[in-house]
Length: 162
Picture 1: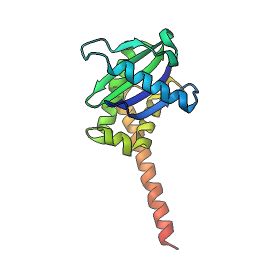
Picture 2 (picture 1 turned 30 degrees about the vertical axis):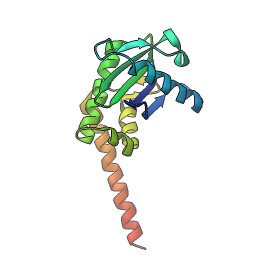
Picture 3 (picture 1 turned 135 degrees about the vertical axis):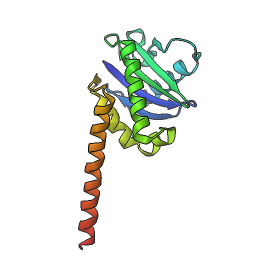
Picture 4 (picture 1 turned 90 degrees about the horizontal axis):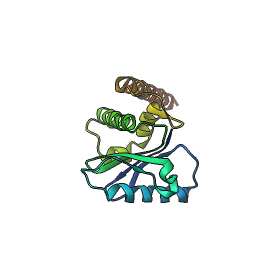
């Protein structure tokens, strides 16, 4: 099961954090800092799996991550998850973001956090993987965008009628 999904930049600034277990806000911030320190100090040519930090469960959990440009994508999972399966999920997530934002960058994650969370919710819910087919995810995201645009149009037209 996935316990947390974290995205942070090279300086440790969190750009997305999604926890599937309840932690208070201070503990979440400590987990993000600890995870950044564990992942960022590793060489580029080493394995992308490591034991979880003490705050998120120690050796019972694994951190599986990928480093793309200025962002780290980190999934904290328990022993029931496949490391290679999660690496593939990270790849699908990044490729989906890339298609939705046309060359995703750190600013897209900052200014469109709701859309990023929606994409993530199409893939993972409650710590369980729902969908790994990028085309299906994009279809659902496009449907959501169309619905939002139609709601905006309806809202604007009712305001003009007044």
